Every structure is written in C-alpha cells, then in structure tokens.
Length: 156
Image (cartoon, rainbow, N blue to C red; front, side, top):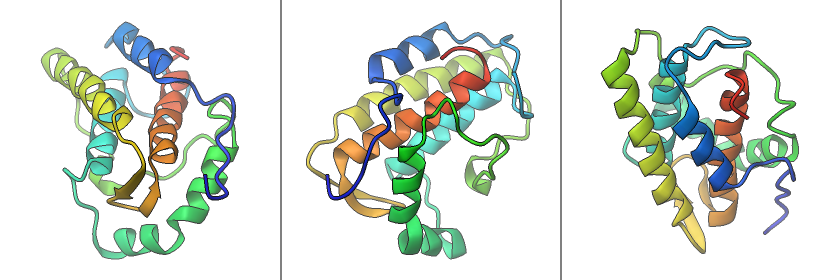
C-alpha cells in the first residue's frame, strides 16, 4: 500500500454503517459544537468531496495536493478513538446552521449512500483532494473520519 499504515482500530464499513443507522437526532455530543444532525450533514459533505461532488479549490485544494499524502499517513496511523478533538474543518463542510429532522434523515441517507460508493472503489483512486491513492486508503480515510465523529456522539 505504498507506505500507508491503517490503524487497526479503524472500523470496517459494517460498524460505520450500523452506527449511522443507530444515530439519533437527539444524541448528545461528548465534545465539540455540532449536533448529531449537523455531524451527519458534515460526514455526508465530506464523503461528497471524496466523490468529487463538492469541489475544494484555492489554497485548501493546493495544500491538499501538496501535503495531503503526508497528512493521510499521519491521520491513519492514529486510532480514530484517540484523535485530537477540535481540529479545524474545511469551510465547505463546516455546518453551522441547524439541521432539522427531515434534513437529518436526508443527511443520514446520503452518508449511507456515499459510503456504498466509496466502499466500491478499487485499485487506484484519483482522489479529488489528495491525487492518486490506493482505494483501500481512501476507504479507510473516510471510515476513520466518520469513526472519530461517531465516537463524539457515543455511537462507536
């Protein structure tokens, strides 16, 4: 896998899907500022970036291409259950507006749908942010990020 190490605590897709299926709008956060519905929207948008539906350009896009592979190596080497809290969020996936019940259900459905697409990736992935990476690494990266937030709400 070209020097990438995926931490063994990174959950498989069944665990991530099960946690999102069990997520409830009223789940209380353990830290941070997002509500559970906002987190679901955040993960849906994050996955949509990975699938090329939301473009990230400018300085963020440039930096992602420049140092992204180093970031991925460091990110995946740490357990998602030990990730630093309060890390910065890309403006395109920062959710500050309230997310109501119907929007929450929509976000959760998008999360599950986009995970199906991400998990179907094989071989090399021309990732919209990081360039060419092994699909296994991209899949793990999406699950790792989701696990961090699912832990935030006590679901993993």
